[in-house]
Structure formats: C-alpha cells, structure tokens
Length: 329
Image (cartoon, rainbow, N blue to C red):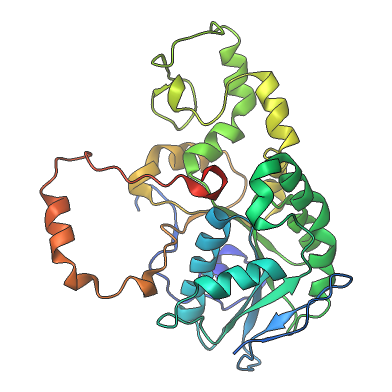
C-alpha cells in the first residue's frame, strides 16, 4: 500500500503492489461534451462505483515527454488496482484528441481511468515550437484556473493530486483544497540535481574561465559524474539562470517542499549517484517509478529473443538510446 506508507496523515489504500514503484534506499467509449472555450469542459469514461475507491487526479505538463510517462504510470497504477482506485487525467481538449488518435485498440485505457478536459487555453500543439517561451508562460498562467474549476465537478472527492513538478500551481490548488500532492519529475534525476543545486554550481563556476573548450570536464555538480561542458543541458551562467527563470523552469524547485513526495521516472541502475545525493537533501519521501513506458503495448517480449541476443553480444556500456523529445523535434 504505497501511498498509505507515503502519506500517513491520510489513509489511502491505493497501491498494493506495483513492481515499478520503489521507495528508494541504498539496500535496495468515451463521451465528449461539445467544445466550449468559454467554460471548463469535461470528458468522462464511465467508471465502476465503489465506496472503497480512492480518487487520484493526474495533471501532466502539456508536452509529449511529460504526458506520455505520466499516462503510462497512471495506467500501471489503474491496472494494478482495478477495484480500489480511480484515476482522472486532466488535459486540454486538443490533447485529448491527440491522445485518441495515437491510442491503440490493443491496449485500451483501463476502465477505472478516465480523462477530463479543460478548454484550449494554450497555443496549438503544432505551432508552439515557434514561440516556446510564450507557450511555457501560458502553461504557468492560463491553465491553473480552469483546472481548479474542474475539481468542483469531479466525483468522488479527490484524495490525491499527482502533478508534474513544473506545474507549481498544482501544489497551490492542493493546499487550498487540503488535498495531498505527489510531485512527478518527468525528466532525468541528473537534470533535477543540476537545477536543484544551480546556485551552488554557479558559485563554483564563477572561478572558471568563461570560454572553456567543449571538451573541458567539470566535476562539481552534485550527483553527476565529471561531465563535458558540451554535454550540459544548460549554460553555467547567471544570465542563463535568468532565462531558465523566465521559462518557468525553476519555480517548481522551492514548491517541492510543500508536496508529500517526489517521484522520479528513472531507475537506480542508471542514476544511482544522483538519487543518493538528492535523497538526504530533500525533506520529503523520494520514490523511483521508472521507466514509465507503455508495457502493455510492447507485446510478448519472449518472442523477441533476437533483440536480447544482440544486446547481450555487445560490450558493456556500448549501446546508447537517444530520444530528442517533442520540443527539439
């Protein structure tokens, strides 16, 4: 019963056993209302009623690299707990259409999981890359109100909010409504460590020449092995920190301490060092929930022995998988 352990202040019999959920320690038919952009709208899948069911609302950040892993996590939770858990995922009307078009009939949404929609208050998905700054600002300023209005329509009462860490306003909604919030970090734990320790890293960087070669390695980012400057996701400068703040990428950091737990979509084998560094510094429980991939749509992996044979024939640490993400692509 993961969240019973996670949130002792409220008794939520949500998760009995999810293999991908680990508290980290060293020992180790949908009917749709016609779009009406003047008011909050909702799309519900009929769900089994039970007085013992707990209701979780998931709020993903509107980007494929954020929505997909959170949806996969929610599906895993719903499949493992068909009788005592309901999950509602809040997305825009446009995103609901995108998800429908990409869904597979072979892996339908669990019956105890549904979608609820808010109006299309964000720039269209197809053109958002032309003004990423404007898109991110809109996410932070336009989504909160219709999302909170939707809470008044949801039944049964919401017992837990599962929200993307970047959506710091979701924590404010939870605090106002006395609903616990679990924060979901959709990127790597190493990226979280860089942002979490950014001020410390910038202080160390003040003594570093401004124009270092890309091959130069720095070794003072907590939780990250020595890394080439060329491989960093962000420039180490106060000017770039201002840009990150403008992009709303730093606002969620201090708000994390107001949540009940932090979920990382990683696995210890990949980022053990970063997790070990972060865990004692964070004042809330930390859970590892990776890899957050659609396991139900992978088919019978036992029929794919040739893939495993090929991987096993490669030298250790020689195979790299790269995904550029929707923002870049």
